Length: 299
Length: 313
Image 1 (cartoon, one colour):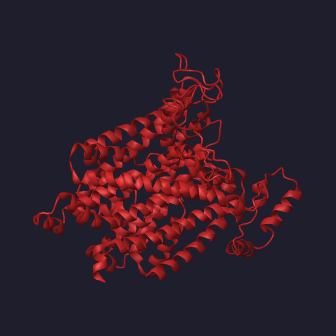
Image 2 (cartoon, rainbow over the protein chains, first blue to last red):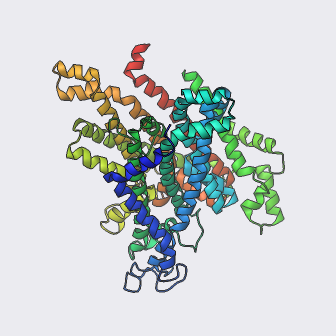
Image 3 (cartoon, each protein chain N blue to C red):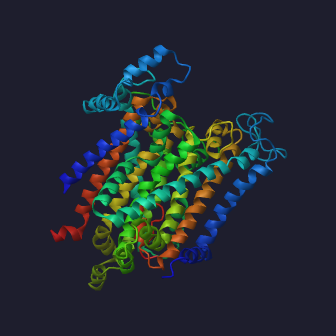
């Protein structure tokens, strides 16, 4: 089976499509800006440098914010933490979800029933509400937000992975490996998982997008990275009152989040389409995921 | 079938209540300290411990909370001492109006656009609508909301209010202008999924044998679309509408907060800021119960709407 590098083939094929190239470029630009930004910010992102809500000028190209801080510097400095948290939450949520989903499909019977009932319970919480619930008493600590968002992804990922893993578990070579008394973990990671990499890739793309939405949303509501640290979600909320005076303090971070999520989602869509040709039941994936890459039936 | 689904739903809700309880009241350390802060006087800590029964064992704490819930008593708000159900009840109605309005408008517009896109597959309309749908998909609610505020209330035009403060005691439908932007935000956020699912399901139905048969019989295209193809594409679309209602349950949190709309979403944000445990427990429980309920209804309705499954019986 030459499945080891199939995911690379799919990625390459996705990048070559117009959709994939546009998506990757948009998301890549914002990611680049978030990473390089803190090093090239012209002013301190947390110090008051001029009047409140000053209009754009040559010294401050995007004007100033609610406390007279440089908007450009804050925009440049305020992305990497969001991205890092989203990446961590995605890694946590997808790995837990993949393990649970494959385990449910592989062991079947009681284990399957137990895992899927637990999944049902956690699915009942809207993701943002679940994150709010977890930080409500303990306070918005960064690790807790990552864990909360990660946990809220896991049941959705598990459901998708279970539905596609069921089919793989029935294949002859899996049955053959099983007959050789291979330990279950080795069968799941060594034999089943490699066949599901394209599905996992789409899940990573989707969950990363949602992580950004939820974590930026938490910051927007005041439960993310705490001020005075610059952060796109927080910036949008704290500068809303100055929308009439200097709209750029709101427009700049809003546009960056929008471009990032549009880019990521478009690229994920391209990856899902690219992997359709590689014999994977991705339509089912998209439908059971319910959202995101809802593939047109005959695309 | 329906009975089993309802029983499973009840079991899920019991488990949900345990998760809510554990997340709010069973943290390591003292929840009273977490709520009041370390500067609180011993008297206040003691009073809060009494109110939430924090000095008792965990099963006993849970028992007294869930016992109250079963009798419709969700405790008293820590923020102002009033009963939670009295405080949140009217807000529940406001949120329901928002969710229902956004659900209906978003579904209708997106459904019709999806139908047209499928009927005129690969036309310019299809391409433009599909690209727009892909662009809006996964756009955060607050980005859509802020964009609408910039365009319709603050910077470009001043047609609609940026804040939807509805005075307590007045029904939200009294002032439609206050409802427009929050409803539009939510409708825009859910529309792409319904559009894509409708388009996909219709295209599939249009390529099926029975539609081809109907075509050969010389039925008008309109009749073929609406009478033959549409009913067969409904079950997956109903599933997606259900999923979107569930999505709205989370979406109202941010949207109500942006527009200062007095519903349970904004109340949840306030309650989390105040660490008002009984109010948080109540609102999260209501949202989860809504999820379980919508899931059961969606399953039953899509089963009933499926012509093939109906015929098999």
